[in-house]
Structures are given as structure tokens and as C-alpha cells.
Length: 241
Image 1 (cartoon, rainbow, N blue to C red):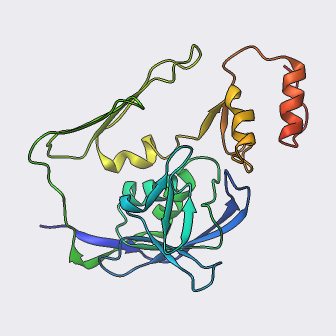
Image 2: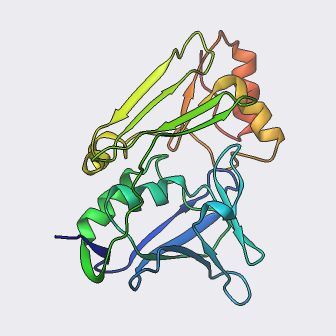
């Protein structure tokens, strides 16, 4: 029997600051009709422009995914969209009153838990699937990115990444089945290396970052003087080495 499309049983609202902008944002997931997909609506802007969550609307990926359409942008939407896919939701209208999704605790866990608690409903239209008939391969030599997709009966992911760090070696993760998303993927948190902090601040990023929404990996010896300087830079209390 073919699976039906799904949407949320009821609206869900989140509030919090954006990781990069530091702006306080309210965001509401609303049930949406069949074949609606994932659409963001910037309710804080004139005419409340919509932004479809489509690959062709991606305009930036350096420190988060940024979508742009109809003269409006929405950024850092990875955890939001991952929670929809991972929790089996097909159609959602996301109303947001700022330029960035709330970072919450730096993971997709709060989104996934709220979706699970609220529940989903089946719709009338059947899901459509893209089925691979042969291997697909993509290679970006400049950025060292290599993606291979193989035909299979289930959707599974195997990911390998190397940050060229003495502290954090080669990282490997796998997701054998999508229904394991909440337990195995949703808790994964945003992280940053200590040596990146000043660069990110100087480039007008991570204005909303702190130890409650990101893990900071200390990848080298650091002096008390440098720690104090970083604390002042983020307007945080001083800590000891």
C-alpha cells in the first residue's frame, strides 16, 4: 500500500535567538495542504514573502544554509528541515518573524521532540519518490567534497569527514534507517573550533553563539590572556584555563 503525505496535527511555536544574527525570533510550524512542501513565510516583512525550501533557492552554505526567494532570506534552517524529513512530515508552513531560525540548544532535538509530541496526520495524496536506477557521483575537487549515491531498497547514509585537526580526528557516522533520526541524529550539536571564534566574529557571524547552543572544541593550548580576550569579545564572564 502506498504511503500518504503527512502534515502536523497542530501548530508548534518556538522562540529563541539566531546563532549568527543574535536576533530574537519567533517561529511557528503550521499544518499545510497536500503537496505544499516546506515553505517559509517572513511575517516580519512587507507583503510577508514566501521562501520555498528548494535547492535552487540556496544562496550561501559557508556557515549555515541560507535560502533566498522573492527578495527575502532565511538562514540556518538545517535543523528545522532535518527534523521534518527525519520525523516523516511532508507539508509544513513555517512562519518566522526574523532572518534566521532559532538555534535553540544547537541541535534538532527540540524540533524533533515537539513534532513527535504534537503528532502528524495522513493526507489524501500519495507520496512521490525519486528512485535511483544507477549510481550517481559528484566530486568538488576545490572543496574536497565527494558524494556517491547508490540504488537501494531503503534510504541510508554513511558520512566521513576530516577536519585536519590533531584533537578531532576522522569522523564517521551512519544512519541505517530514517526512523532512527530522533535517537541517532537529532541530538547532534553545532560545534566550532576555538581558533575559529575571532574570525567568525570579525565576519559578523555567531552573534548569538554561546556554550548553551554550541560546543567549543579547544584544539590547542590557550593562555589565560587569550581566554579573557575572547570572553570580552563575546561579552561573557571570564573563565580560568
